[in-house]
Image (cartoon, rainbow, N blue to C red; front, side, top):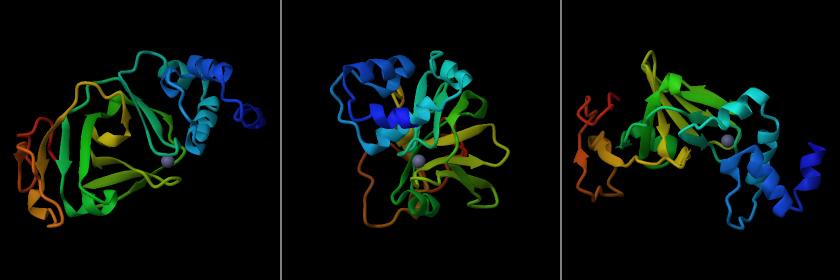
Length: 197
Ligand SMILES: [Zn+2]
């Protein structure tokens, strides 16, 4: 810990190279200005177990994390395309409509779940959030084989795009849906690939 503090003010090329070798996604080649949150991320990375470090470098297809880094994870499977949910619960959790991808549960590996808390939001589902920074990360139907992931949590999520809107009948009047994507009054019931919410 004290080592991190001592190293932080420098944040020069040496530090960059060191972090890059530890955790490739965290340090970009550009001259990034490091924030407090980044330093926290780095500290958490330094606390990672050997196993987690190996896992994070093992060619995972995508990495994701909350604002502060107290929840971070790797995904090794295919991500579902993004579906925008306009239901009242998503509005009240995310502050606006929610953009969710999804993945098979066994394709997500947590690098850090120290901040992860679950809120039982209905009889059928629970929502995962970070108790440190308040980020809303997950929606999970109880007993389902998949977990929905708020798309904004994902870094380097190549190849996924927004494909439609669900629960449009709940949409408040303060915004309009102006794209031409498919719209469903409630769940698309599978018409949008992988959407059974
Ligand atoms: Zn957090």
